[in-house]
Image 1 (cartoon, rainbow, N blue to C red):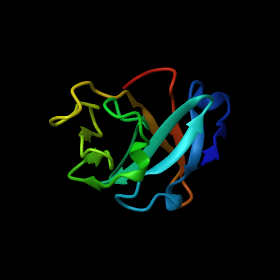
Image 2: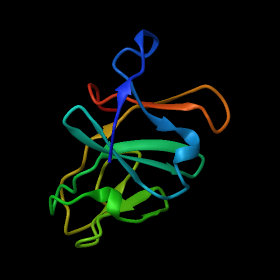
Image 3: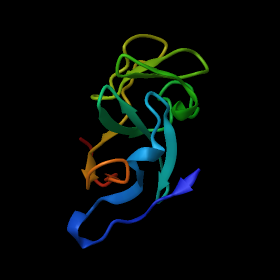
Image 4: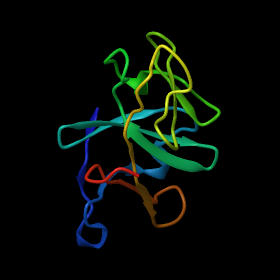
Length: 120
């Protein structure tokens, strides 16, 4: 688990959580922004950030698998859309928060910034 550092005044409300090369395709990365656990995922050419706790079972989603732009809860198999946070079926019935992501810079060393002060 890593702790995010402030990204600076240019990205007010956003904090840098990693650099792009630290995100393996379809492998969730858990970070904490303040007291908020966040799962950051690089998939299908985009980077997404969602609340890291399953709305059904209260376990870390970053320990699950990613497929078709969805993250799966490893405990009971609930799937959540990384774009909207909506569950795709039972047992979860409540969505999880999604957060805006900014990529600053180019290439593998581009900074990945996330804001938990606003939902996307």
